[in-house]
View 1 (cartoon, one colour):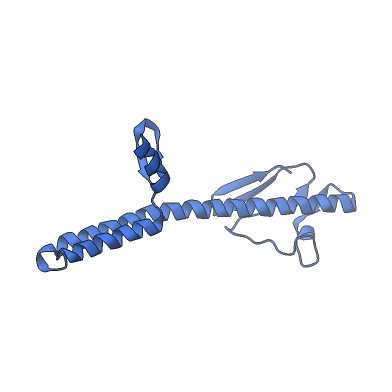
View 2 (cartoon, rainbow, N blue to C red):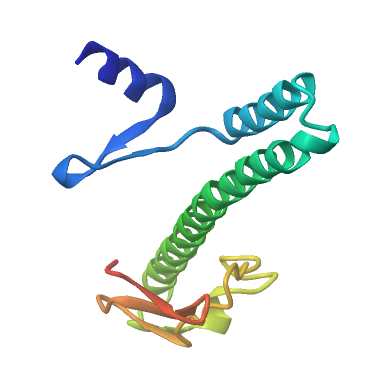
Length: 157
């Protein structure tokens, strides 16, 4: 039991339902393991004719495993970053719209009145090809569509 807790902390082991677990090693650790296996194999003459297939095959499997672990992790980080940036943009637009409502005594505002070099928001940086609403109404939720062509984010000011 103590060994499992230690392994969870050291190697990032995640226990799933039904007792299955997944090891999520950091990328430098995976790379170090792959290099270590390759060096260990070279010392045992894997680079010579009889051992070439085994040595390079194991090294290739380690590198493929590294890529298989790194790609989904990168996609999760990219997805999360896009979501956070879009929500940050929406919050800025909602705050700018509220300021516009207060200063002008209206309940509707267009996007071009909020974003521009002389307006409340200097530039709206798109991160995933998303589409922001053209008009904003006080008290109505803001929905951004087309995030990476598929996702939608809704924000209630």
